[in-house]
Structure formats: C-alpha cells, structure tokens
Image (cartoon, rainbow, N blue to C red; front, side, top):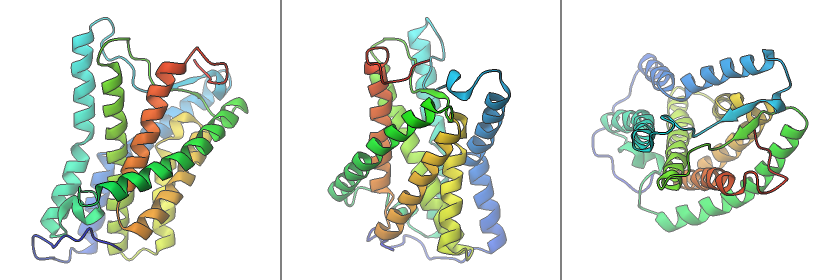
Length: 265
C-alpha cells in the first residue's frame, strides 16, 4: 500500500491488541458506530410506523432555528465543526503512534490532481448508478423518501450544504476506510473480513434511509475499500464522496418540486 511518501515523524511503537481494540471501539462509539446504532433505531421506528417506508421521509440538513437565520447559521457551522472532532482524534492517535497522522492514510495535499481526477471518475460512475438504484428502491417501497435538504432560502444555504457534504466525506472515508482498515490490519484481520466490516458499517449508518440505503451504501463501501487497497489513499474517496453529496444536496435544492421524477416529501 502506498503511504503517501511521508517519513514517520516519530519512532513506531507496536500497540498491544487490547489497546488497539479499545481505541477502535471508542473512536467508533464517538462517531460512525454511534450513527449506526441511531440509524438502526430510526429504521425500527420507520418499520413499526403506520404506512410504508416510501410514505415516510428521511430528512437531512434541516433548519436548526426556523425563522432565525443567523442563529440557524451558527448551529449549522457548530454541527459541521463538531462532527469533524473524531477525525482530529484519529489524526492525533496516528501521529502519537508514529504513523505520520492522516498522511499515512493518504489524506494530504501531496497528490491533489490525481486525487481530484480519480475522485471525479468514481463520483461519475457511482452517482448515476446510485440515483437509479435509489429511485427503484423508493418506488418499490424499500426506501424512505430521502430529503437531502430543507434549509430556508437564505444567502448561506448553498455554502452550508457544500460544507456539510465535505464534512460527511471526510468523516466517513477517514474513519470507516482508512483508520478502520489500518487498525483491523494491525489486529490480524483478513482483507476479506476487513472489507465486509467496513462496508456493512457504512451500510448500517445509512439504514435510516431504508433497506435500499443500506444495500446501496454497502456496495459503495465494497468499491471504496477495494480502491483504497489499490491506491493506498483516502484522498480520491473523499473527493468522490464530497462530489456525490454536493450534487445530491444542491441538486435537490434546485430541482425539488420542479421535475416529476424526483420524489419529494
């Protein structure tokens, strides 16, 4: 695996498996593991609520203070910033380990153009297939109607949607791909077991969207893990994920209610 061409800043030290397991569980409990449990509870609620899944809505990027735009903006920026804290924790843990921080996962500015090019190609391939799969899943009752944004029409709406998309991509790809695979490799897991764990985790914290959201994101997780194993960098994956979310968030804001093929709540 490529390591980004960065020399370790500190001497490496072998961490005991018990420490690695505890650290991994704590990081997940503070981030995507907690999201997976929340998503599971949300999905259970949707299943037991009267009416089919497609008649219910999974809402993202909603207003935190309706009618108070400046307070709303403060809450939006606060949520985006605090969501990145687990990534900062991962960077700290990898630096203290002597692994070179996030650069050891290929999340740096050493290869901006290859990362951008690869990420754009990934987004183009997954985006079209993902949209088609979502529309089929929603139409067949396997998915809730996803509402990517319901922010008020104020000046900061689109910048916040873009920042939210970038935050999502950084948190997910750094933790559920780069960091998780590194720790599972250190614990002696097989590549297949690590791939399945990462992809199932990705699907699990999207389960609030329905069965389609779980399956679609699990498949995406398999593709992302295989590409990470090939390139040794999460940079292209962050780019791809950010582009996918930006198109979803901004596209919905521009098209909702104006085209007949896009489901709305």
